[in-house]
Image (tube, rainbow, N blue to C red; front, side, top):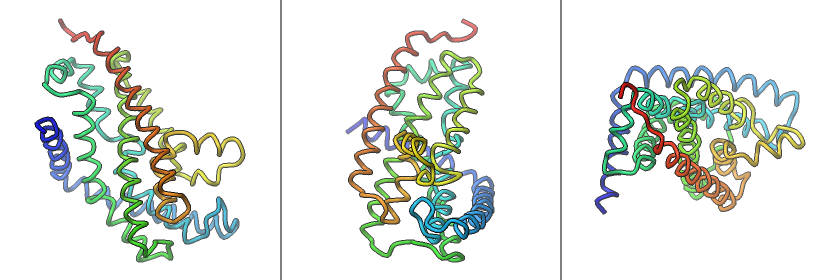
Length: 266
């Protein structure tokens, strides 16, 4: 119970920390709305030429765009979460302080990132999504059960997102400069999550591969659950398997990394 209260406090702290950046949040809402409009009109033109592309009708394609904007910062699809901070703490040696805390390193950062994700969903994601629903014809369901399934899928997507970024951050124990790893995170975040185009439109073997990767659990699958295009329970199973695999990998890499901690300067 004591540990649960500790990590709940860390999550609450992560929420409050990002809530203080009001100007940045407002700028993020504006940016996501503008990019949503650009992508939306691009999708409308594309679906005019290719109706039912990827199995979506035009309303579903538009809904997918605005879900992507709502979840962009929530799931840190191109980074922007804790990973840069953790890499910097490794570089400076401040991670030694983290390791002395009476708390698990992975769970500490997971709790903080879940707090960040929740704030980004409420503070930065809801308004662009609501704007899109009001301005464009969309495929938003009226069934409360589908919304409940969607919320669960997003929560699991948060864990998968953290697990991927935690592995990237741990590379800082071997790389003094993590810029390259973070750049790779941006590229995979754009391509493999379906942020540019839904993974359903990828042809042949390429489509099968990207839909089997963990990034599919972050945007594509929650979107399909909300629009009734995917079985929620199979989606949960896919997300949980990848969450367990990636968190376990993170635990193993963390164990190897902490055995070789060298605090620079001493």
